[in-house]
Image (cartoon, rainbow, N blue to C red; front, side, top):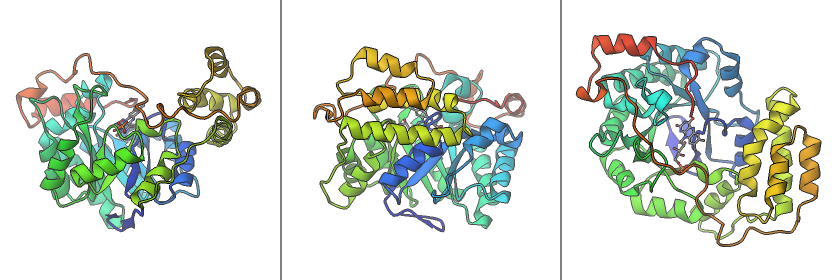
Length: 377
Ligand SMILES: Cc1cc2nc3c(=O)[nH]c(=O)nc-3n(C[C@H](O)[C@H](O)[C@H](O)COP(=O)(O)O)c2cc1C
């Protein structure tokens, strides 16, 4: 797949996930599937512009990573443009993705993430400004969005058209609405509709739990590539499986518990580097990954709880050493759903948001003053 000047050998994307897709995890994914697109977690434009140390840490890449792929989030077009300018001027990335898909209330109630495409003027302006900054530097821009706010307020075809018209190199559709959050099923027919509607490549996203799902999505929708979120949590080897499947091979990575333990330790060591040698922070970050790595393996509750109490690499290693190294994942668990799965309780939007498709002057003043530093998933 071509993304502007970049070539993505296997049309698979690690979908950005806040708190998950930092460089240690991306490096593991990339080792299994060396020619995919591995996107960093969303960076709040305002935090990058303010040079917030936490945001800057999230912008780091390992030397092996190419292309280096960053995702920006923001509501105020001028701030997102400034963030893009920093990315370009400081050669921080080779690809920029824009987040218009976050369903978290803290974000949507300020008009951001998946609430934003409803305001077509804002969507257009953000993409326009970012492409204008990135394109001359040879940095392709892509946009990621959902089907809409709910089924009475669908926006994806229009968002795709705007993204294409403003110069995006590709788009990603997570085929759920904001209201659907992570519940139910991603409706792949909507991905097919978007593919029909656009000339630029579409990455289909939602509910790919194994390589066969990836192939099925491409066959059913005609999408040019697939984006993997929860399906790779605790399973970076899914990228090897997908690469094999796209090449027509049945080979799949099915690690024993001992082999998974080795991946956990490698992940842990990379996280220590990520946290500048702070082992405690690394092990705390690792905890959620351990829960995912162990999902489905015959490991008792007390052992899992012991992992959650670890404070050092030595403690993690000691528990791993005590596991049944030859245990296999039961076949019925392989390639099954994982991670969050719930519907939204309610969609939170700025007051009067749905009344018009364009922002008023007053709305802009209110929104831009409120553009958060600390958007999160
Ligand atoms: C923990 C978590 C964090 C996420 N963070 C981001 C993010 O930073 N940016 C983004 O565009 N999407 C984010 N997403 C959405 C995923 O990229 C993806 O679109 C979604 O999970 C659907 O794909 P899946 O069914 O393969 O998980 C996040 C999802 C999860 C579960």
